[in-house]
Structure formats: structure tokens, C-alpha cells
Figure 1 (cartoon, rainbow, N blue to C red):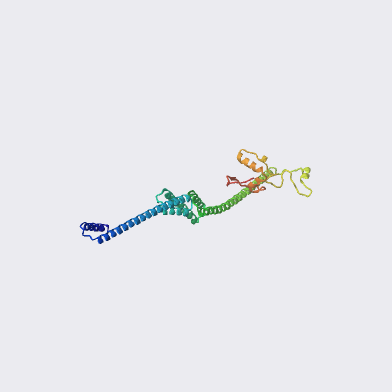
Figure 2 (figure 1 turned 120 degrees about the vertical axis):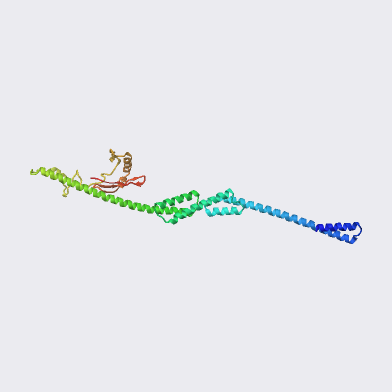
Length: 318
């Protein structure tokens, strides 16, 4: 359009120079030219205003993007916790704010989410297995340690710990029942051994009596009665008491104290000192004897070493 007006103006100027352009036509052309120039200037002004508005809008968008990115990074730093959903939400917010996936902070957070997912899946697997043995306890403990090391925040950790406690309680009950069964079996064997020793001792006594009787066969036996001794052991009610050999056998006579302990050739000083410490506090020594039959010479003693019951703690006297 501008080129057309320029050509028209040149044409009119040529006609005017030759005197061929009428005055009336010349004024119309000048007015149109001025109007066109004004329109062009207004157009330029509008385009400049539009350009400035677009630049301002772009600047504001850039500032808003930078602000959102800064807030997203700050949130990502603040949400470096063990809660998977919260950390993943912070990552999504950062990516949505324009933080690139290759950013070190986003990459580290993504790696952490993967580690937390791995720990969570391991917990879910061992909890869903339904196993209840010693191996299951070990697997649960490993899963809890892995989740704790990863910093996982989840109810699954407490569920695994509760499961460990439950299994260990069941195992302890089974172990206690097995221990009692074995202890009863050992006690039965000791009773049989003690009975067998008494039988053999009685047979030996009878054999010696028979030998003595045969050696003195035919010889009259004269036993002098000691009336003074008989009076000392015979009570008025007719019951017989022996001041030397009492009819009843007691486990401890007049209590127990550290002075009763004497180390022999095979005694361990650490063991005897432990017994001495027990004897200095009331009747703690009595608690070592879970079962005893003093008349039969049968004693069952329970010992623990480092909190663990020691096998083979039963013994029998002659």
C-alpha cells in the first residue's frame, strides 16, 4: 500500500510539475496521504505497545517459573524423608515446576524413592510368607534392618517387629516344653540309676552279711545290752530316736551360708564364688534345686551360663 501511494504521489508530483494536475485533485491526494501516514503511525504505536506487553508477560512468566522452581527445590530438600508418597509428590512438583530430570537433587531423590520401594517390597514379601520358624525370624529381622537403614517410614516395620515378637514367643514356649520334657526324662533316668545303685548296695550288704554268717557258723552270738544307751534313745512315748543317725534326711541343715563352701581339687573358683554369693542372700541356693529327693540321694540342679540353660545339670547321690 505504501509503495502504491508512493508511486501515486510521484505520479501526481509529475503531473503537478507539468501543470496538468488540478488543484482540487492535489488537495484530495495530500489529505489521503496524511491520513495514511497517521494510520501507519498509530499502527506502529499499537505494535510497540503489544510488543512491550508481550515482553512484560514473558518476563512475568519467567519470574513465576523461577519462583515455582525455587519453591519446588526447597520442598524437595525439606521432604527428604522416609515417606514414599510425600517424597514422590515433591519430585513430581519439582518436575512440574521445570526442574530437569537430570538435576542432581531430583536424581538423588528418585534413587531414594527406588530404595524405599525396595525396602517396602521386602517387608511385604516376608510378612505375606506366613512362615513361623527360626528362619522366618531371621528374614523378618533382615527386612527390618534393611528398611531402617534406608530410612523408610511405614507401618510395615512395626508389623514386622510384632511378628518377630509373636514368633519368638511361640518358639520360646516350644523350647520350654521341650526342655521340660528332657528334664523329666533325665530325672526318670536318674531315679532308675539311683534305684539300681541301692539295689546293688543292698545285695552287696546281704552278701557280706551272709559271708560273715558263714564264717561264724556254729559260734554263739552274744550281744551285751547297753541299758544306758537304750534309755537315751528311747522316749517315753515308745518312739525310737537316734542322736547320731537321724531317721530323716534334709537338703540343708540349719540353713546355708558361705562358710559351708569348700573348694576341692576339681572345684572352679569362679563357680564356687558364684554359689557363695547366692548363699549370702537368704535362700537363693534353694532355687538352684528344681527337684530333689534327699532320702533317695537324688538332686536336680539347674544352671545357666550367660542366660542359657546348660544341659546335663542333674546328679544323684549314693
